[in-house]
Amino acid sequence: MGNEPNFLPTFQFHYAGRPGRSAYWVHQYIPSLFNSTLAGIPGNDDCAMGAFSAFAFMGFFPVAGQDVLLLTPPLFREVSIRTIDGHGWATLRNVNFDPEYKDKYIQSVRLNGKPYTKNWITHDFFASGGMLEFVLGPEESSWGTRKEDLPPSLSTGMF
Image 1 (cartoon, rainbow, N blue to C red):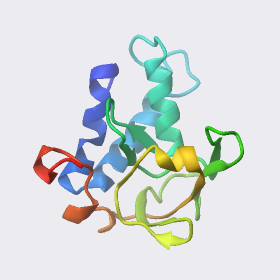
Image 2: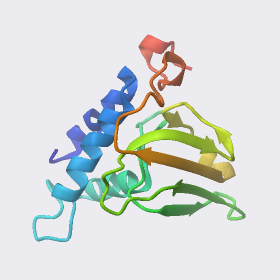
Image 3: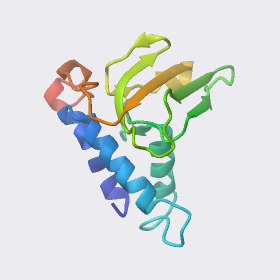
Image 4: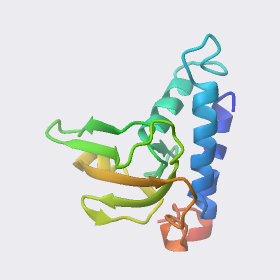
């Protein structure tokens, strides 16, 4: 990890049914490479490195050119983003937040109170608003691993 070409490979495991591996790498890269030290932003920060870390901290990563955001455990207790129309909020909440980040694997997710098993969401969540709640644990789980939970790709027939 050192520059933009390495962003998507961090999250490639979502497509293989292993979103926990993506979470593992996010939790390796962020504390070690994106921090408040003099070398705290690797590579050439022309906004992309800061955007990568901001997305990772909030718990998602947008796939360029697609209506797909890959989900990882937020590194905050909670983050809310105002909807496009300005009348609502899209909130990502880490239900059992662990400030030491030992619980870094998604065990389950609820979208507006209902179980959500896909390891990705669309931009509609941020346009319409809602609550995305992550329950985390110390071990990789089966969340987001079924074929129907994988993000659209050529192998899954796209949309």
